[in-house]
Amino acid sequence: MGSPVRALNSDPGFHEHYFFDLDESRAETLKGVCEGRENVVVNVGDCNPFIRDLATNLAAPGVRGVAFLDPYGAHLEWQTLEALAGTGTMEAMINFPVAMAINRMITKSGKVPENWSDQLTRCFGPEQWRDVAYRVERDLFGEEMVQKHGNVVERLLDLYMGRLRVIFPHVSSPRLIRNTRGAPLYFLIWAGPHRLGLKGADYILKKGEKVSKHRRS
Image (cartoon, rainbow, N blue to C red; front, side, top):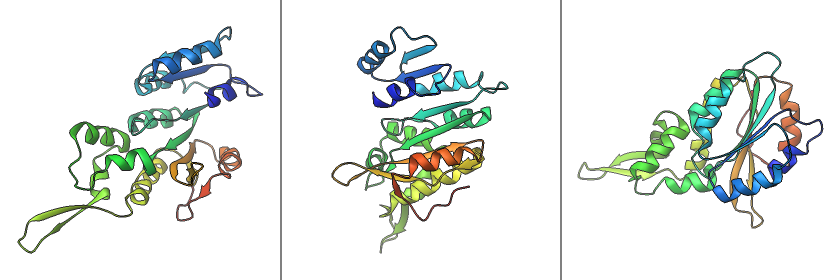
């Protein structure tokens, strides 16, 4: 709940706030926090269709906004990022949980359940994620063996960053955020239409762990 409260109390503030949460109880709590405030919308459900619908009105002259995208797993769909990028007015701050939640969906055997596979394809765009995550070899009898790459997190991050740089004019280097025990949680990434936005992104992201191999544009 910390991020919505900070957004609501930012100075200078935003003219409008839109919050989306899959969890009904969290959404109800957020509605309580927003009670009495004008120009605040809280919706329960999948954020993807909400954001894509909202994006159709965000390309108007004079509009400036920030989308803070904090998915539970591989739930942020690529089409949603394309819709935000297409506005030319929106910056996106993305919590990309490839190091934990998404990595768990990339099974060692290569037998990814269909619902997980569909979700990963919606997250990354094309089904290129499978070619990036796995290698196919043949044993002595000519049978195919599917193996998960040992550096799959880095490979999938490369794929995601490369595709972000195609749809957004400017993208920061990713910063790794760890929990209190040092385990990786997610990569924090900024993307937006203006180079000037990178200055603010640098200030925000500098507390994260630098991933030196990635270049920003």
